[in-house]
Image 1: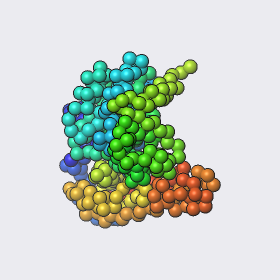
Image 2: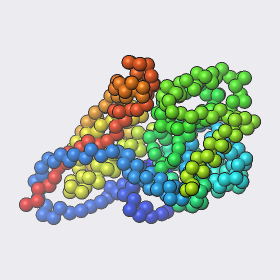
Image 3: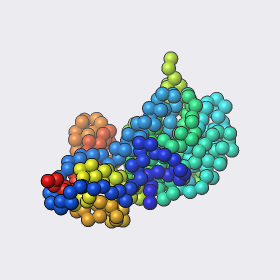
Length: 257
Length: 118
């Protein structure tokens, strides 16, 4: 049972091999003296510090190569993969993109991305409900993204767990769709609190659903006043140009003058 | 169920510390968990029972301090109790910009039995 590493292949974890529990360790205390004393060890240690270290390592890699890394989070079915497909088809020739796809099972999403001509690797988390910095570290080693590119990291469809795990990204983008409730931000506040951008997808369906756009934005701003919004339809392409402008601008900002 | 991976992280860190100190088991562990840390207490307890089996924490007493949330208003800087991230400031009605307490997720201490070397 390891939800720490989703790589699912043989590799050496170098200095991080202690991720895998070794319960069969043995060592001798020498003299067989059974006298024991109680000892309190004050740790004050962050439970996620290992993830934080690896996230910083990823961040350093992105910084050094001028890579703009975007962590895409949402509930299942909000259109993350379709957003990527459309983005890659429409501006894939202007900017260099790479994609890490996170899902519990299958390589279906990576296949969809590869079909657009963009290089993608799939990370299967097995029973794990989120990507962590360690999985992303291995995925980067596989993918070898170019300098001055944009790296999309599509997280596992889940609005709760991925919020806790920093992957080293430059920006966290939360996606919701108008077929979900406009109360989603206050039902799942953590993801909206930790994101910088909110994409509201499937706007072409607004005439058919009871979704209240103003209410949804109002709810999201209650949690995070700094959120920046894009209203898009990945089916019709409506509103996508503003998202593309934002991507181009953020990538350009990384390039040294 | 990210609670299980959190439990596994706690086991890994505390076992490493206990081994470094030459201990073979941990008798007590104290955790600080913020109420805004996305840890669901019931899910955590369930994951704990499953996760600690066969580990040095199997018999350990678990002390969990759930830390209430506190926010600082982005407008008037008032610090107030925060039960949810969307609670408005009681003074001016603004929504917060900063969580100052309640996001904790850390191991405060472990208690081990240290063998006396004679």
